[in-house]
Image (cartoon, rainbow, N blue to C red):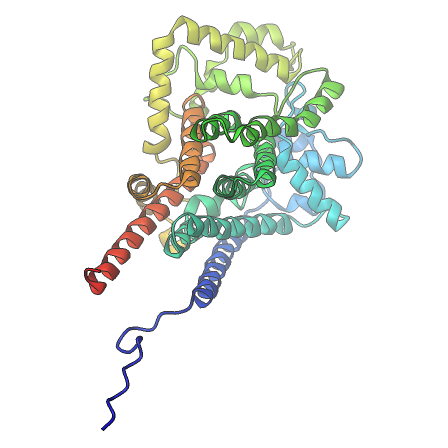
Length: 469
């Protein structure tokens, strides 16, 4: 009598998909989430396109917004800074903004957004429809969600990746900013690309990847200058962590981002005779964000600070028609000097305001609603979403740091701290522009933390089923 053959080892156990099949499922879900995010953005863009163009008063009566670009109610910054610079360059009038013809002085905005718009015109060989420009931004925003999902999957797990992609796809602020030709939408995309390259470089110790990451950080500076100290701080972190062995990587991270800015600096020196690294209004912004009359707890937004300009400087530097007698860079440099004089003379007041502004970045809920989900389009819902992202993001950060020893993950946390610190010497804007990148980090931290806890819980259940070895 023959004995029964042993049952297959897998009998009685749930089937588990192969790694390749799980990867395909993850990519498919990630694509669906990103496509859904693009759909939400396109829906919100249609809402904006339905707004009637503004009356031709004020600055709008002094500049020609030609067809088909005149179909949209562009904001001041969109038109006078970024769109007009790209249009003037495309039509052979030079890489200059219309701001210089209708407002004070000679102003130099950050070039990144205008380069993007000029690239679109150049590839299309014509001035494209506004819907095309905004639609491309929606696609870029959708791609941001996809890349964030891939980043969190590599750092923790597929579950973390799907959560990150979902949050970035449906978060109201990311939907809102994709519908405006400002710096924020594309800044978030470049930031996620940089974080992906940086974490990969740290994990693999690949010099070429580090070089590309450092170049990407330079592009980030050309879009906005918020992260100016990041390269040097990350270089110091990597150098200390490696006990000096990663000096080549540190050198690349510290030097390359500034080298990327050098052509733009030389252009500004040749054109204006002034050493403008990125844009020419940083000093005015610093003064409005840090001046003796500021109480950041009472007036937390830059829009509340317009009256802080110094009458003596304004009278000396403007002519009888109210026009600046000097370039905007010189005007801004004077205010920057005044700001540092104040900081040295009243350090406690300065530091107190910096501490309040640090908290404001997270505690203040700026003007809402701004979401394409019409059923959720209320001030109350917007406030709940912002509070939830803050609380869950900070809890996720704690959980991630408790469960992970990833150096790449620590570099992401360090970037978050850099932005938080530079934000404390800046000031918020009512529309949320100056804090939107922090919400991206909070979304990432929630996903990384929740993914880490899920992986730990799942590993514990597996060990419990297997029993003692």
